[in-house]
Length: 228
Image 1 (cartoon, rainbow, N blue to C red):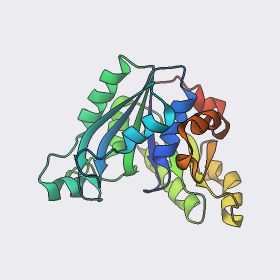
Image 2: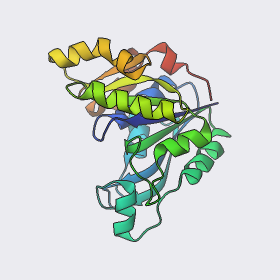
Image 3: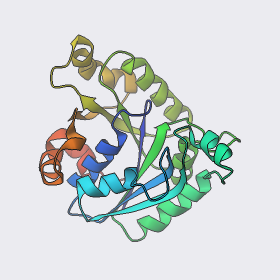
Image 4: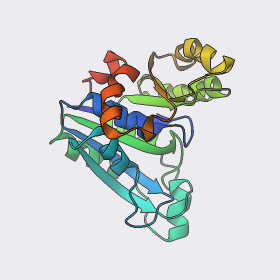
């Protein structure tokens, strides 16, 4: 079995679509997607884990640990709602439980790697460290990407975590100069390979088209990864 953590250099950069693409490539395996904290959604409204299932297919089991109505960092949203924050050990325990029954567990963070889960400063990085799980970093396509990716990768290395690689989460159909040059520069900034480029608008595709095309967006290294 495999546990992978999917994080990003920020929010709204395509983490959910990348998570769904990984799950789609692994459609011959049983997959679970774990969302530790979902913010900005009302009760009953479908969240990111449900979107992964919609795009990737019925072989995916969705699990959401906590949900808060305000579209804020999990620690802030939990405090404002008067609800308990999610803790890294809860994320690790849930992932290990899912791993007992699934070939692949994908943990999709909220926002970036160091967004706070609670007021003590716990983050997704702490959950990844408890699990010893490698991390996939999702980045946007344009300016600012190299610096943000380098900072995220440095944060991983300082915690003894492996950056499996980088995926561009939303590449425009007509990329500008910065986006084109970043494809060569991102592996240097991350100290890890470029694992894929997902086109902008991929999440709007019909699920059947999404699943058909997903393998073309990701490298074989990511699709076939089996290291825990």
